[in-house]
Amino acid sequence: MPNLQSVPKAVPQVEECWAAIDGVRVRYQRAGSGPPLVLVHGLLGYCFSWRFNIPVLAQHATVYALDMPGAGFSDRCPGMDSRFGGSATRLLRFVEHMGICSFDLLGTSHGGAVAMMAASMANQSQPTVRRLILVGPVNPFSAHGRFLAPFLGGRIVSALFRSLFPRVTFTHSYLLRRLYGDPGRIAPGTLEGYSKPIAIPGSLEYGLDIVRTWLDSLHDLESALSQIADIPTLLIWGSKDVAVDPRSAHLLQPYFHNARLVMLDGAGHLPYEEAPVDFNRAVIDFLTTTHTPR
Image (cartoon, rainbow, N blue to C red):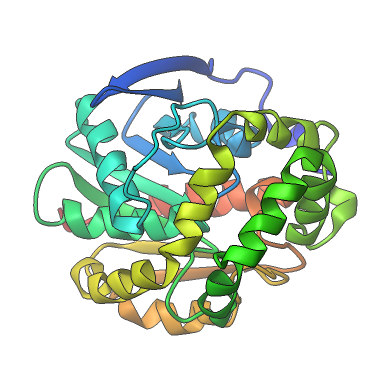
């Protein structure tokens, strides 16, 4: 269970906010003051994913944590472009709507891939990404997703997911335990928190659409890596990550000219929940010691 005593007694207030972006209602949380830091959750996540991090990070930055359209409590919109690039475009539209010109960007898992795509797009226009923090990011060098995604996106498995979806608590409990290096660290209320938005109509379709476009998205991402090589980057991985192979960190790192790798021993795919003290310390150290060329 996370050490909640690491959160200071006097913490910045976390505001729940809403924004209309191109006709889509987007929920986000905002806290703190200072340079903007935008948090992008993973495929089954939403603002809830950052509950152990926002109060700490907000002491060093103005934190924006959004529920990406299609996830959390933001709108589900049939026909959305579900590729990494489509999600990155929506992320940048949110940043522009907030009036942010330059920001630090933290993404995890699927959100890490979206963050890299967004950085490559922002590199050519406003707003610009100052620094990248990638937490077990989906990447072209992890065989897990490259081989698993086509299987999950197939008709038979998609139909199986639809049949299991009414039993969301059981299914989500299994997935959650798999994503932790030590399931004994799962904090009370975690399963209930993640299960709440899953029952909103359109959630399953959104996830399956992403999986169906996975391989094309990985190709697009690999092509975009050269465009973000100059952005100072922090890579954080759990050594027991079963979703994105930790060995791929060493293949991804050389694509950046200034990249730091932190491997959290014993943590799984959700190190920001499983080891929040170490995670927060690594992020704050990076933000306070790494200068940007911009």
